[in-house]
Image (cartoon, rainbow, N blue to C red):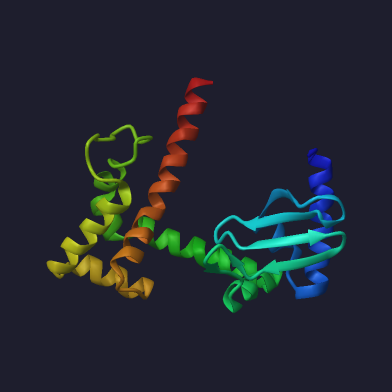
Length: 193
């Protein structure tokens, strides 16, 4: 299907979802991906899927439907629908809160003290060390070891981010690594080109 036709379908999807469910068109643009058509003849629907949750919306003419399940997994929880109903101001506030959170993590003593160790688990990092665990496993192992040692940096980090969950803390601790990897890639591209 041509990009122009997909854009036309997205325009129809945004209008239908705003009318039927109160969804913010900006959220649909950011979160949904076009999957393709399903069915035959008059029964053709166009399927869109959320990039993160894989919840689906079908579009038939100008009518949208939320698929409540995909396989065995239920979709379109109240929280997910509320996320799609966020206003532009709420979206901007969430983006700003995420930026502040990332800034805190990146400059925290915990991240600064373990930065090289964490980055060394990424293949795209110049200091990559092969043969170790993947980044998430390495970060989780580090969090558990620091928790067992009652590390004050971890305690301050967990308190600031309002979680004690090792998996969530590992995920948060790795967030600046992705930024640094992107910065490293851009710097290498500028140097090469």
